[in-house]
Image (cartoon, rainbow, N blue to C red; front, side, top):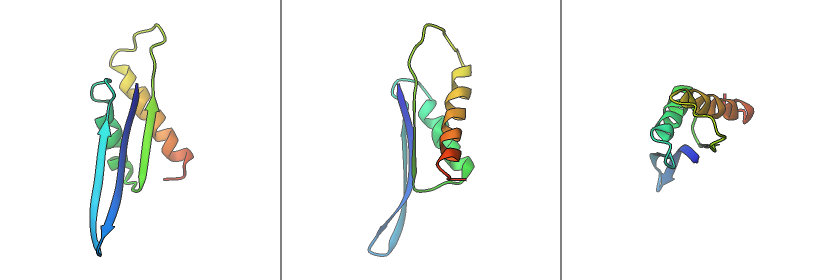
Length: 81
């Protein structure tokens, strides 16, 4: 699964418009979690992508904690906050 969320400001003819979206690629709710992370961190002009594959162990609901942590680590590493 490749889950992502993005957020940026588009300027057209001097008018600013916020553009944001997300996709969970079948990992129900994960895209929304990443979008909430972008809002919480107050970052803009960014896309964050987290990839996950099944390694034989069911993580259950805890997987969302790991997905959000990896997304946050990527934002930190990228210097977004």
